[in-house]
Image (tube, rainbow, N blue to C red; front, side, top):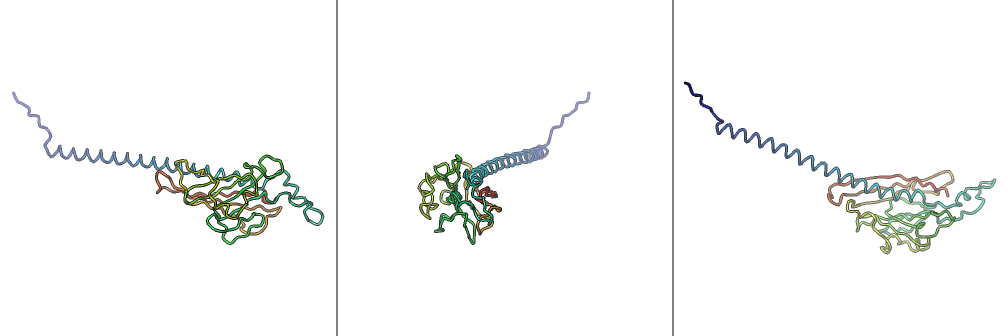
Length: 238
């Protein structure tokens, strides 16, 4: 009777198999970690984009309405010689731009003329309740970028006189509230540019405001995003 001897793996074969297995496991683990990190970055970027887009949406809605008041169309009436039939009923129903860190005088955009039209503060006014006047905190408001707070700030005033009480209104800290601290977005720059940068508005022309915003993720500061939004001033001719 012949006996069969069962031969197992040698030590070298076991070591080779072990090393090959470790390489496969290590590769799979590295790939898994990379996918998890990519997904986390994608989620953070999406949250950053949504947060910044939300801030732009809020400002865009107010900028589009700036200058509106119920009887504004009366200002477009002209006589036979092309002159206005009546004087504008409310020239304060526009908005202003300024540089909060400097000494730039607030200028109504009916007459704004600038060399470098980049501002970090915008003051808005419009007739929210259609009563033909500009009054009340829901009709007189402003937005500004505050570098120290790394955020977008918002304020409302009771009267136009309060809003335009001094050229440093955009520089004063009283009454401004940060509306961008949601745990996701940290802003590094917000600017407003008007195009064209000079001249008066006209019954047939409308200018645009370009909002530029740069932000970074609070959880991952290395992750940054730059957005731009062009907003047409619908009531510029008024």
